[in-house]
Figure 1 (cartoon, rainbow, N blue to C red):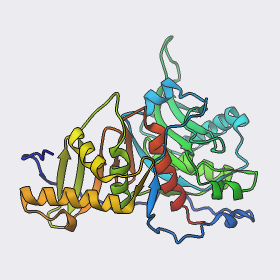
Figure 2 (figure 1 turned 30 degrees about the vertical axis):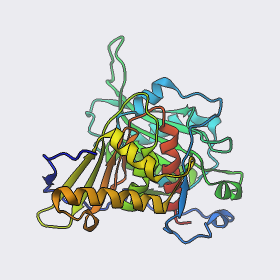
Figure 3 (figure 1 turned 120 degrees about the horizontal axis):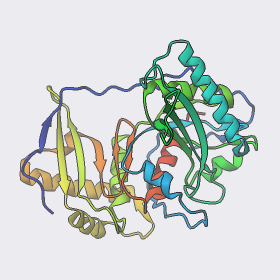
Length: 347
């Protein structure tokens, strides 16, 4: 295992703060939804997690949509089930959302795409993201801008994108939901906060749902590190990088990079199960990483906070940001994010 000797300490002047999504509050009032509440205490750490496997469903990934979401940073939100959402009405939803955006623009809301631009929303089914048969199909929502008098051959510019998905959703929750509810608990956004607020507000009013920011705890980042450690890579390969926040002023981060083969070798000596990871194995992994780092730099990483994990599979930040780096393991990553989103919803 090799540890870099340069660039370990990185001063950072900007402070992090937790923000709620700028959407009006809303509550689901239909009886029966409260029965989906989990019996286990909210936030209880699992003793083990199964490794989400790639989907064996016959539904293939859409190459163009998949290429669009890879290597792009997405902000994470959790969403309560959508009431009376229908996949047959996607064109109607696009028309209604476009009208809502136009109405907001006429009120003087600035969308940062130019006053002369016309914006139009589109809804489309996103195949290939289900983990199992009873998961709800993913939906991609995009907002494009174009000049009022476009030249022939001019393509619309995508200025905002968001997609709802459910990969390997909790069967206990899915089975207890009324038929009128569509469970798409994970919402990923790439775009301005202004458009996010408008789109989110329209969804809340149209489908009686609630949105919430989805931060990722240091513990869940550690789980991600372990769950992604054993993934076989046949495309993009990168070093595993862990970023720790040091509780000092001025703010300082520690970046800890490990060669991918060294990290995989370390994990293979720890992980005993073929299809699951235990909390004890996660602790052993990080104890080894902490000990190795202390031998080199005499710094106790156990006194810091893990804030970012970057691997060949994906990159995740505690602020609720994710970047997908591998098409091969996309559904696997979405499985864990779906679990976190469903646990984040306070029914």
